[in-house]
Image 1: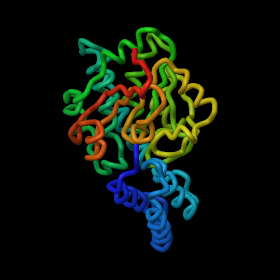
Image 2: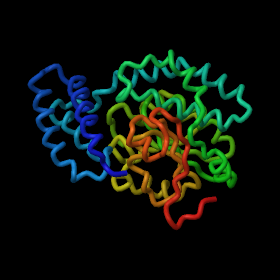
Image 3: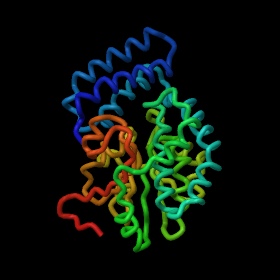
Image 4: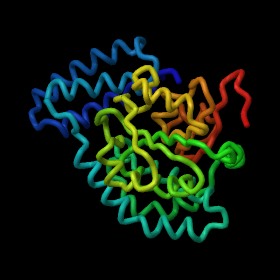
Length: 289
């Protein structure tokens, strides 16, 4: 998906947030922002918002030497999400359709994105969010795609959300070999190998690093082994808005599972802001199952 002008102020705000997390020195913060504004002026060089975000956040690492400014926020979100596991498990156990319920739990985990909701009281809102239906729900196409067994690749999004994903991974692992993709290096609050293990992902899926260090899986940056897995998996399920931005033109079927958090994404999916979506993307010439 193209980089929209609307993305630019969000990216600049996010870099300022990261700069303040990485350093208390206002002079260092100012140098980061000077470089960020210069990068912003080159926005036409970037194909997607995740691609530009990766370069913007590299400025923070370069000026501060801190590789993971969001480490404390990720730890906080993981701890908060783990406290919600009994609630999430009850929601799935009491549902008439466990797969559909696990998909909704996984999608609801998208509200753990601290890059958007810096002060979200997650415990106060999750129960209500779980009860909100999908605006678009391609559950039956997904069920049909899963019918043949084989390998399912789930592309993870943010760290706290990975706890919510474990319930979906458990459902999928009953009949499939499941792989869960994480970022190749820390970027914003996205899930890496360390957070996936803390979330318990490795109890239900093989955790693989994609090689991409952007806040959205850029296939051109992925490791060869991961790209082979992406191309060969029987089903690919992509989590979150950043992955949708990076993979919306993917050359294969992808199921996108996310909450639309801005007007541009809502427009692209033809849903209102805040809506939950499970949508099958099938590129031209690919016959869906």
